[in-house]
Length: 339
Image 1 (cartoon, rainbow, N blue to C red):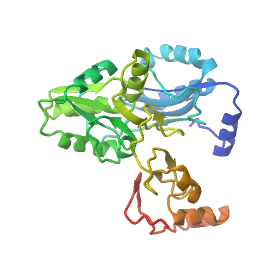
Image 2: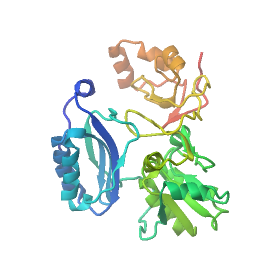
Image 3: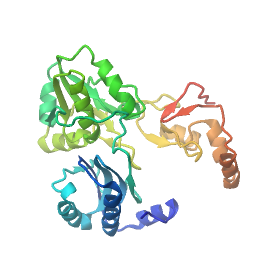
Image 4: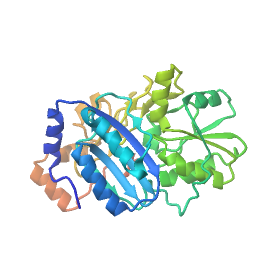
């Protein structure tokens, strides 16, 4: 299988030395593919254009978050137009300009481009697609119900005003939670939203199949919304940051800070991964706590980080785990103790 052969340190050093700008974007499409063959052809084509990022390919379609060198951007668009499955692909351009979001290219074959825990879904009826202006107008009506189809760590740092936000770790968990939260609102206007729209395609169909009649989804997700309100001079109904799945971990939409540091409780919306390589917990950490704990989530992880690398590797190989905190995906559990 075609894949990158260089280590992380080398790749990041190469990225830092680049003397050209990049554009970060995402795209998706539900379409029937032969994933194994498609994956290899796509990897070669993207690699030739120095494209970095993460691309998932499955029989049900493609889901990509990538960064493209600006001097190759026209070639990239020509490439998409030359492939039947990617022709006229809507692109969601990142809010930030020239951001170093990815440092290598990954193209993986997956069972599904979005894990949902569901069987076959009928995509013939996914509800209505609405734009930023239409969403803003709908939210002027207090009867409108808007639902965040993202994970809790995404909505924690930014969401639409008045949105119902499932307390879920995964999209698979968010689907039934969202249905339950809106169970008594089947006759209301429902608006679903996510980062770029891909999860809402499935969520829209899921809501329709559960008896909701007026189902709508924000076309292009938060990324497209942010671009449209800027272009059209609209008031943002989204507050805070939009979580993104790359090294940036967030794009600021408004100056509102709606979350808190998980360690000291001060206002903060900066996500980080614990510096202990055997943890890498995703959590919110302010600059003061970052310095105090060396970028770690607990004093125990901080003490492990302080060990020689050879000792850290021994701990990982020995599967020695601490009981200071229990980790489940992105959650900090109650046994967290800070001193």
